[in-house]
Image 1 (cartoon, rainbow, N blue to C red):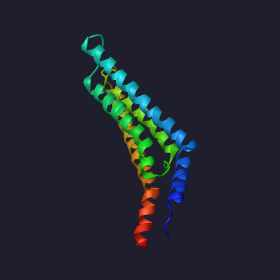
Image 2: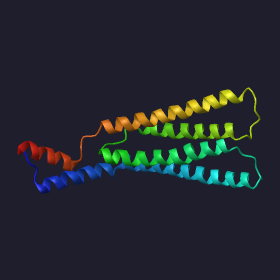
Image 3: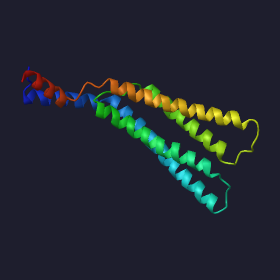
Image 4: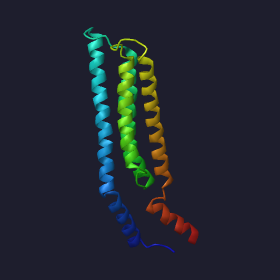
Length: 172
């Protein structure tokens, strides 16, 4: 059955209303949290780098790399992917609860790794479990992100335009 142009716009508008509902607003707020956290890591890393270069503070470069790679880059990617992937997939985010859990685990992991490799903590036998624990927390957060987005993409049913094209192709 072919859907007329008017019905097509009605289906599209209905889909937009669903995407603009309270669930989408909560996902947008969460995405902004990720982006804000990533910007804080960017500024904190730049400040630590400036303090290190000016010899005010002795901060190891390894810690700076963890802060910039996982704190700035990864958090920015996660925040934007939680916003864009559901939009591209025409689906709702699989689990907001997992996305929130991942946010906190990422922050714990980034701060733990940054602190572990900063050179500011005295080296001792307690440091190794702290490093391993921080890495495990970080890896769990990365797995949660991959799982959440994968499940979101599995919910993809196609855009209204793709449904119309499929129906038109079967009728031809």
